[in-house]
Length: 481
Image (cartoon, rainbow, N blue to C red; front, side, top):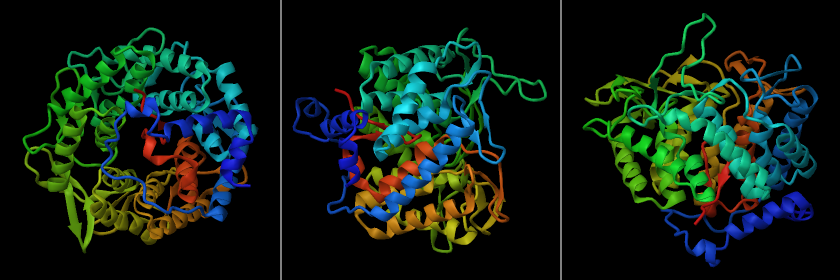
């Protein structure tokens, strides 16, 4: 029986499949009011690699089984110590919320039903604790919105709205750019104390944490009819974009109270990465020409000044945002999202060239490191916390070109991850890709992103790519008229 036939045979996932099928029909009245603005569409003739799909599904069940045994009701699994980790003083069910839509897409109905019951019965945001706005938005708000669109249960939307309302005080800075932290009960934006009792730096933030809220809050506005969510996030992005340099670049750290740049290093890696991703995706999800303009000018700037060529390979390093002077030649796992974004934006030749560089991280080091110097190919940060971005880019390129070499790359990367990180009760971070030393963690994004993208690479028919936009946590979001 095909995966789609399996989906259709089960009540929870049957509704999800019907909703996905509905969003896949442009001729319907709802879809007619949501214009197709994508620069490039899905390639014809995509096939399913059933053996690969089965491998990925088995890996998911192995990871989820460890969570159920040792971390049920908590945020994430510690697979080596057979324990759990909660991000804050009360659990927010990070792994179930993050992983639910992957279960639905894979047709894992018993697991999806149990995760859904846990979420709807026990998830609450009424806790007097300070949370990181960015992380709970992409993992929880994005996951709840996707779950609502897939499942249809209004409780998912109620939880999403409750969370968003509790995060809204973060946008109260003089510039409208959000603070990084907010208390879920009091709305206080004071950051938490670190281990030495010192407050985290405030009111500083970065482009990624400012600009990677648009899809989730914007879609909530569409779903509820309340424009305040979109107004807040769009203002924040426009305020940030308005502080770009004369070269069109943004820096790494900004004061959200004054709007002054604290660090003027520009790059495409962690801390800036998904700012660029969401400029493009907000245009596609909302058909908003303001975001289109911000994306196109920003894309041109990073291609002109941040892109670099070393030994015939394309990389993106570090430059000063004001002068364009190159200040570093570092890349790594978090920068591996960019081929996907470039491909989605229609620049397939550049995306393909960059994907060759991304794959070189794997062939050179066995598993991609968190960071390395591409001018010397020396590792500068050796960890691998089960990140998805390389497989994500392989998926986008396969779906948009139909070229099997991208699926071959993604399959190879998946096998490298499994071989290096699988343990008895899940999958474990690598503390050092050079030695294979493991760390006691399994991030929720491993289920939400890494395994979802691997599965969709194996079976692209499981989701209509042309009619969803993935948030940066791989939660598929449908346009709402």
